[in-house]
Figure 1 (cartoon, rainbow, N blue to C red):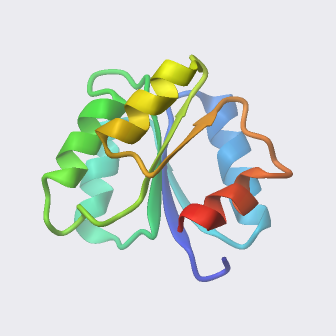
Figure 2 (tube, rainbow, N blue to C red; figure 1 turned 45 degrees about the vertical axis):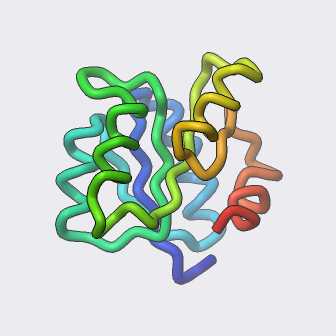
Length: 121
């Protein structure tokens, strides 16, 4: 995990802190942005092992960001992990069916998040 670099796209400051703290504790390099547009910009200049994307972002939401990523051959292979506070089994299944690699409800569970994430990466 210490060689991983991840992009976290999250507009909520508390959720940004939780995700980045958990990942950094496990040695993951993390870049955090608050909008999909900022995340797509970083993807142009950086290599990431995965992106953790909040589904409910301002302007372009996480679903829109996923479409941009999957439509770009340079990034289409990158695992994208959906997170949201609005959890339901239906939303989780829709996220997977749309092309997200995995789905995690908020709040993220520090003791299991990275271990579960490792299974998908």
